[in-house]
Length: 172
Length: 96
Image (cartoon, each protein chain N blue to C red):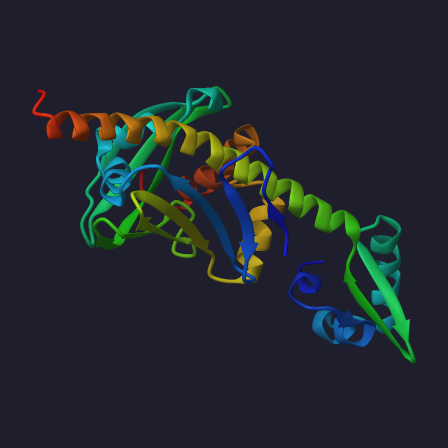
């Protein structure tokens, strides 16, 4: 399977299994602190949208408990309307495991699982994005969504949201 | 193409899967092969089709873009976590 592991980088990414993307990195801190940075909205919004991506986080609501929802709204020069990501937290086990759904594309979105494994004061973070099928991940790759090319991602997403708005009640 | 992403397939498999004639599928495959998207190999009487080098390169490029996005995010996360660490150690020393 394809994998990517630039020599000078601490972040690894690969397509594992047929329908899963796996990203990992080790942080030089206890798991409790890395988990805190993922689950406190005021901390989360400081790193989730790096300035270099050219997008602005408009709002960030994280209700981190099982069944709780999250909602992130962004603005981007290429998109006239805010871009919204949302879903539910499915598992919340501090400081070792966090699972959420990605529902902006409907019920068929990927499920994201992040595990925080502490050893000798460092934390191995592994994030898995599991798509419902191999086809779904192939399509995500083919369409450019989820890629580092945010421009492309957002134009794709915009089309998706426009389609959703056409069929749904007015977006929240 | 998507079908070949799941598993290699023979011309006959693809004809059945897409409800097309073997001749029709052969034409399609020839075009895709020309473009480097599919490769085929004939063993005995069966021609097996699989994803070509270009399709695999595209996937590798996509995954590298995905990795870079997360690398950028994690660099920022690193900074936030370092701050939290400073806060913790500050507490440990009885500082504010």
